[in-house]
Image 1 (cartoon, rainbow, N blue to C red):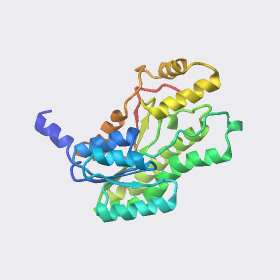
Image 2: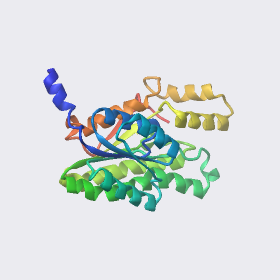
Image 3: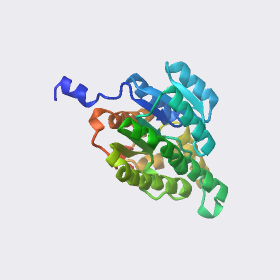
Length: 265
């Protein structure tokens, strides 16, 4: 394929109006930085004002708002600001999530269970229900939901997280069917063992539970990855960019693993 055709395949992001939840750090910031560099008009939310301020300093023209996606009032306020500042929406990136508790099912409190599902799954619903009218008004659009390798593999001692991420895949496939006639594409991305503070915290908690060192626990995780290495937040960002580009215009209803092939959890 010649260079002109390649540029056409990966074009189409410049000027898109995009909302990224939990976009001030980790995977969310990597997505924001990548799409900003490709000319998109962005709004991000996060629960950390400090992280939002730092992101806004780095990315010129970035719109930000402090919001908890599991809070219905926060989400409503966010979409009101989005309409005022961006004037519409072309894509929603449902990235917000938490690791949830580590422990046996008999040791997990109902409160911790609910919080994990509220952020990881219900938060996507709350954002999507307000995004869809804007995407329909635009005549087409894209929704990308962040699931996980834990959304296709059972994950012992992480039942709230795995349950939520399995739910994200069902949510994604259902929406793809529902919204396809409106030319709205819906896909899920499934990260695996991702470099960053959240994964280090998960490794720490599991190592503590098993009574082994952090490095031993990390090695156990990587033994289950075919490529034997962690992935970068920017690997997720690259997949998001492809799905939002002209090259991804006929991809919908898919659960796309970006994980070095996690074989099991």
